Image (cartoon, rainbow, N blue to C red; front, side, top):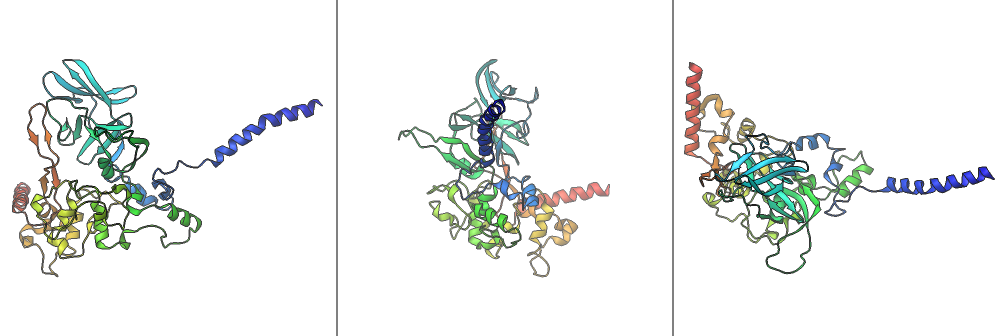
Amino acid sequence: MKSNRKLFLTLIFIAPLVVIFSQCLTIKDKPDPRGDAFAGSSTCIKCHRDVYDNYLHTAHFSTTRLADIHSIGGSFDHGKNEYHFSKDEKVVMEQRKDGLYQVAYVKGKEIAAQRFDITFGGVKAESYLYWKGSQTFQLPLSYFKTLGWTNSPGFDSTYADYGRVIGRRCFECHASYIKDLPMANQSLSQTESFDKSSVILGIDCERCHGPLANHVNYHTDYPNEKNPKYVTTYLSLSRAQRVDMCAVCHSGNKHRILHTVFDFQPGDTLSHFVEMPLFPEAVDSTKLDVHGNQAQLLASSKCFINSKMDCATCHNVHKNDRGNVALFSQKCMTCHNTVNHNFCPMASSLGAAIKNNCIDCHMPARSSNVITVETAGKGKEVPYLVRTHHIAIYTDASQKVINYLKASNKLTSK
């Protein structure tokens, strides 16, 4: 009797555990906030490890990321962590128990403090957002690699402003997804609110290749199938579709959005998402901004007009080739060479240098009219330089290169 009773009590104790553990084993991964058609970039690793690992080092991958001591370029060290708006007001970057903060002081008294939550950018500069409830705001200070801590672009340089709301439009180009929360009322003053748990930071695989759940499921079931199924490859698109895919984020922000570009998928026509055509027949490149209008600048170039080139002719988005002017110059020479009788007329005077740098002459860095930064408390604008994508002959840029080479030769001869 006693043994039967012990067995009965044991079964009563074990039965709930069996149910609990069986539920744990059947729990699915967190669903993608974009819907069941999406698999999530982590599912790409099994078959595309090299591509995935290389992509982690690109600007697209890191265009937004969680803000921490590793993803913030500026220093938090004493003496390097302050920005003075005036003799009485400053912002100090501080590490506190629950995170990293931008703290505003007036005459030594703390008047505001908000945490670094999201880092935007990182190649030349970074800006930062903080969450306040379900809304995102831009922090008053940004970090520029050539300037250090400075006021965020477009902010007044005389006081710390924590009130700039960041809406979905910024996330549409700096992230892969964020879900809007329904507005509680129709007030004109109400700003956008988001589901914080829905954010997919950076530009992920499915932003450029479309939803991949069917692709992943098929190739998991048929691992020996080498012909990619249920995925949009870049080569499968027309030239216009390829440019449209990049132009989603690289065509500026002056066009009124008709439909969220989070819904844009490779192969779609971008004019269905924006109010105006992006590439009119006549484009005045001098009125385009080097920061946002890369697609239009490229489309206005003779190289583009007289060839079949597109963005991927020069850019491999899966690798970090930034700054490798020799690599890009070699791509120029696939078309511009002595065989085609269109080689650089300065080749003989430039010598071996012609093979290493076409870029500084024909795609020089120019000041952005959209991004401007003012120095601390003085109101003096500092230019933000971006390489233009209007490929052309720039006399001033060519002269700088010639002068540099002459100086280098003199130094070498000594």
